[in-house]
Length: 319
Image (cartoon, rainbow, N blue to C red; front, side):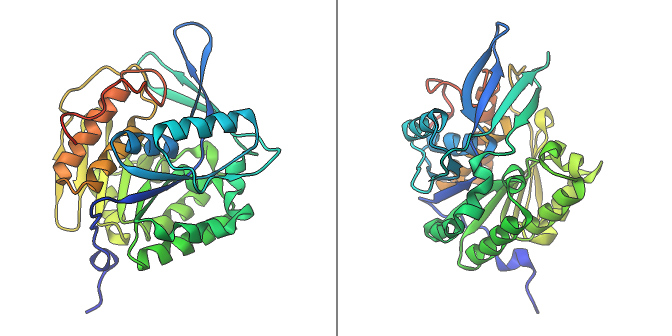
């Protein structure tokens, strides 16, 4: 009898995992108490990489930057966070992307992007050899925003490589992070998500983004869609409503231990991802990994900006 995709590729993340994260870092402008904006650096995958590192994980960031002052400051910041920059490529005479975050009275964020000509978008076209450089890693993390960066031909090369990576024993971790403004059409996004769905081992999903992409549906329908393709571990984050963890045999619900009133929900999911994966990389139980993610995210949303100060505790007890 033939094996289904998820029977053939069980998640065994192991310990001492080396994680490669593919994406884009941008210049960030965020609200502060005055009418001015705070200048920082962020992006969904970069946020995850930083929080993974802060929770004692080993991680490399895969992207392209420019030779400008903002790119130099980004690299300096990543080094200070313990995020590896071995594979960061430089495309001279370009400008990193910019995004502005506005928060409403409930702390919910609204994004405005200027990224059409950012160097990260050209990474796979300018440096196609970078994919083979990732063979030495145990797991690769990317997001829906990562997919939106690249041309259709570059995405096809990425998908082809990820199939090779999984066939060689590597794990693919995907965060759906869907932003409609980053895609030319919803059909383009659905096609790309359909491809990545078939080569994902661990899916870290926002139910809000799943509904934005596929329309209203239940959490059960969501987890079934991903499990039937290839995933063997599906985590559905649903804000204050809690988290559902599904595998091919069962679904477990985790409530939110302490509901807080957020100051800024930017990077809530990213910080959850970083702490969850860092705990998974240490071989902890899935329940402990979920709780680690929830604690980290709860700390982050009580402060302004995607990357909180280093003195803010992100680990509850000993991770």
